Length: 138
Image (cartoon, rainbow, N blue to C red; front, side, top):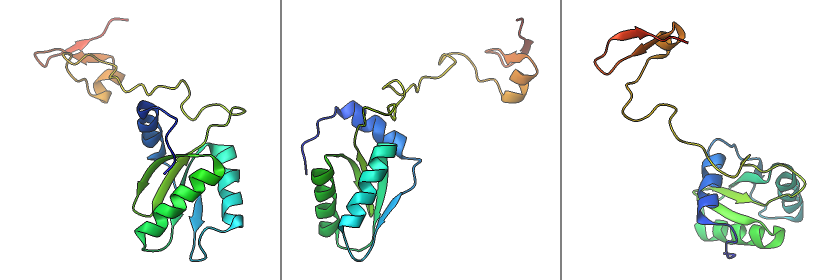
């Protein structure tokens, strides 16, 4: 497989961003043809991060296709699980897949602050550590 030129952190962020994506290209029984490569190239130009579904049960063949796609289209391999291949190629003319390059996964409340259900928060209340409802002053 081609050597990764992206950091491990970015690769993990891209893998997380790709989780919700559906495959946009299907490689059928005819394998990796020029038409399929053109279609993958088109989608990489538009989306930068794509998933590809490969028909067939031969894992070695899927891995070979993955390596060939990444080598010919100058893309980075992100993830390969089962019949789904995830690849990324940065397009400087388009905004990044990750808007600011980081994934903000921190909680809004601190870890020692008690959880307030949405219905209470919408009504302007907040739970205290003892479990009592208190009206929030704004």
